Length: 459
Image (cartoon, rainbow, N blue to C red; front, side):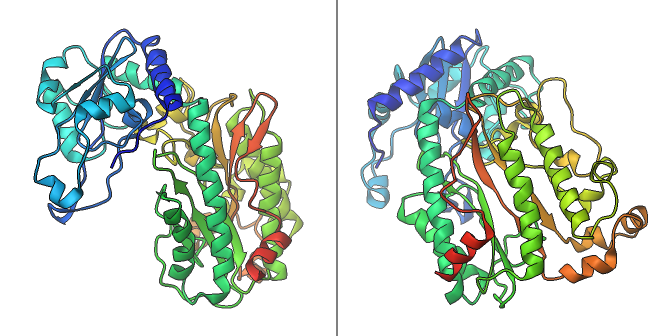
């Protein structure tokens, strides 16, 4: 059953619609998307509504669309078939749902084609809905960068709204962060009893499910932390292994958290693991300390690169001046990705629009390795929520690349590096809100200091 929304949420939704109306002078139609079948029509993957639809509609309604014009919302969806009650129970009709979300009207889906003239939209990810969008509007509706002027204008307007989180969004994001913190603590506590990665993952996701949430992305729980998006969970946990857990909750309304911690399976970092961990933590702390309105996010990334380079020089792994090493991208041998990304209704917020959301207008991605993976290149503003996630990885495909080994042969002490063979990957990630005065770490209740992590693992 669909829960009744609060009056405060209805007011938040109406305010969002009115703010959009102040930015565009044409109608916008946003589709929610549909469920995708796994192997036969009645067996579907879990439904996730399109985030732009959710932002203005407030409920994860499948097979629905909304038309926004002059601050008003009209809902288009079909009523449930009578026989569906046998399988899914009684469901509210569209008029009831319209009242719940504060819509001015509710119409059957078939009538949408009567209201599409001069309307803009944003592409939905599932193929069936995307096809419907293109057919009804009689033009290509493409993801990433909308080609039509009207669609591009709508995308830019929605980005300007979603970049800065309102109170309704922040309430949901705080809930996601709090549950994520508890999930990570549960994973740490379960490690001593676990035999394979999947058992730690189960302990973490159990907390999400118990709070009626799901994961905001496929969980990464792995002893192979050098595989940045590892989604395999069958590896055994051996004493001395580092376990990297990148797990985040998503609330019922679709708002996300994104947190990473790294700990040792036997509860105690080795000396080499602790040394690398502290280098990554220094970069993490330095970036958060520098978060203020007006600060360029790319500068935070470069700060992390410099701190990591300096730490690796101090450990004898890299040789040279840290700033010079960053200029020649030597640090990317071990820290090849960006420092983080936007966070909101999507875990990589609004990346369905490509770099339109992440990059300030007129800015483009660098062609430098490492810097080219930076997902956000904007000055920070109060109300923005970002992740800070530096890391250290020994990726065989990078470290064994003949060209890279030749290029950096004079700045890497390969013999010294071999002494850190028990460090495959370390990442430390928190969710940080930009405030008027600086920043607030929404996930601060989960410790980052190595000794406190060890205490949580050992119990």
